[in-house]
Figure (cartoon, rainbow, N blue to C red):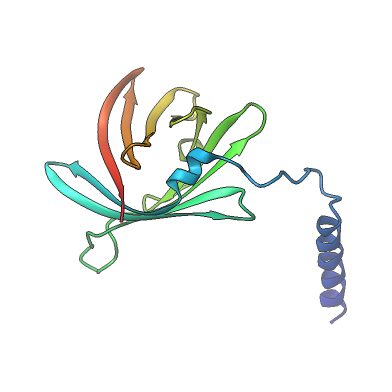
Length: 176
């Protein structure tokens, strides 16, 4: 009982420190990004993979006091057990210094490592996320481009092998 009370006191103290703003990082203001605002919503993703036309569903919403855009992609295709063949939770935020977007990609392949995180320069209608491997070599590119006229997105995904980009998928996103 005494150990539990001691632990509870330490936990409450830690919570109070963070609530008072005594933590090492200053809280950032909510993220303002008109480009990410265009990605928020409900989408249908269409692409061709291994010669077969595929459709996934995607929702994107602001989370954590408008600091991140959370994307939930889920495949309409099912495994033999009835689970989606592919599912991903993706978070996009923005680093103030240097001014860039950051993305964290968590999906059915599992594991969090260097290749789960990508970075993109801030541009008007595009986020070209670059992902690097453990040795710092470019490993993957996800080039997300917004078309304001059609209110749609194109994601051009490329594997990078020995410095050479090779097409993986081109995904078209339209509002559902």
